[in-house]
Length: 104
Image (cartoon, rainbow, N blue to C red):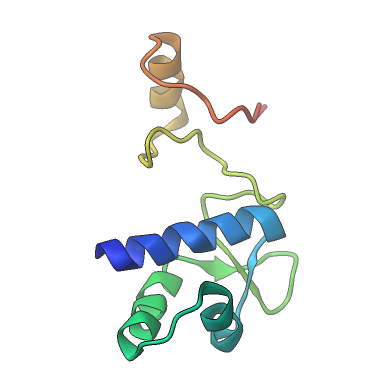
């Protein structure tokens, strides 16, 4: 992804977290994100390929790394995700911090 696409991606992840998903309506997303150029709109198309249909809300999308409550399913380290076991090892070693969300 280009840095512009990553910026859109991160914005959409934030909306997934806050709103328990994002609407599957490009016009709404273009407005929410303030996209104006054809290049930005094309970048949105590319980024939306990372999202899938929401299991509970018709007409909405969710990122596969978020759970139904909009929380990230994995801990995050400076934008990099890994397996849960790898994350737990890094947290135990003091190399990383969890996001503060306790998962069972």
